[in-house]
Picture 1 (tube, rainbow, N blue to C red):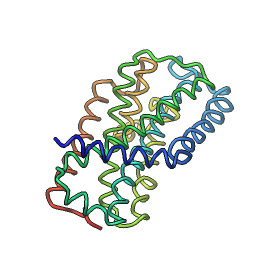
Picture 2: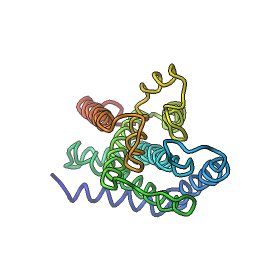
Picture 3: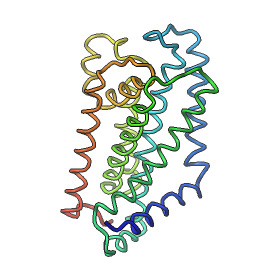
Length: 253
């Protein structure tokens, strides 16, 4: 394992983040703060408690997941797409690097950036609502695994995309609706029975449910199913990336 190469890719991507600090960290935090003000304070004060949890506190895990999912995909997809767009991907491919080392560098940096945003939002939430975490270790595990798995997914999108339009197509048309329909602002049990069954086909439901369980000790889906869902999704992403490097599919622009 070429750790120096992984370190070089990782540091380069993290440096790019700090060069665009306003866009990378400040912007998502401000957007999420507005969600807290509107949904947590204005609307939440008129909402009944959900599973004995105040509505303002109930939406915190969902808002963190909402931001982390979109940031993970965005960071990873742009991270690998720009070398393709600029043509520097040829230098990376010709260097003595394995696919594992390339993926580890780019996905590791994307996941780190997403976790930073998630932690900042968690800290910010304390300024708006009172919230405690029943299972802090599981909260970290779910946050980490979500950042890594969706960074892998974003890496796939970055390789698949031929232009900037395609780069934004999947997050806007697929991921964002799935996140909003995944229980970010409500409990799945609040839906009619038919839509509850439909919601269980949404993979984001299991991520948000498991993450919310780590906060309050209650969830729409059992913790075991949430863990299995994350592992299956991450495994499918790894298998897809393996096939991409094996076949060379769209690696070069």
